[in-house]
Length: 167
Image (cartoon, rainbow, N blue to C red; front, side, top):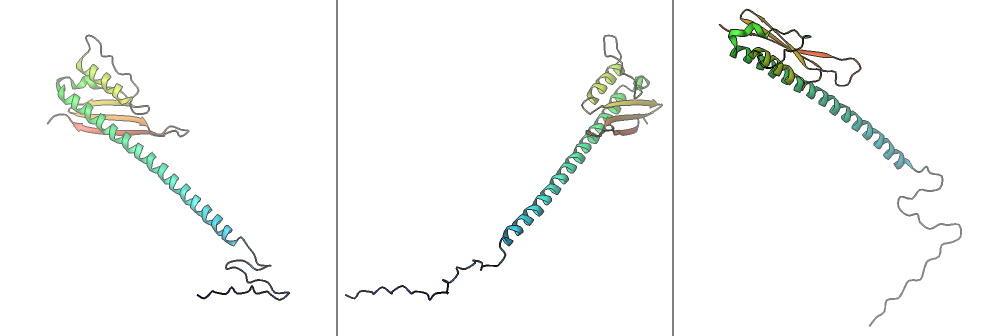
């Protein structure tokens, strides 16, 4: 059985230092360069994320505007269909943009009830209102709403549909 002998510790002469570990800086060298690089990377990343958030907000704003425009088109076509169903009384559907809709009470005509119901449905849009102009066999339906979405001044948007009632 052989025994391994332990090596004696090596002593360094005076004035010499022990070897430096890997990555350690020598006296007089600058430190913290990695930290500055990380801080710059974080700033660049945060600016990029802020830009993406702005794009997202802009996309949502445009998306909501397209929803309102789609609803306006549906409401306009709805009114044209109501007039076509009651074609004999088409001239009773004239309604100005600023006028209030006639009430749908006992004794009201179909046109009065259609206009009152239509104006009520338009209220789902911000400041939604509409007008109907029947001229002979042609009808022009306008749907108007506030498309500003919180801006200081209202931005009124309109969808206008002109249709032929009969051949």
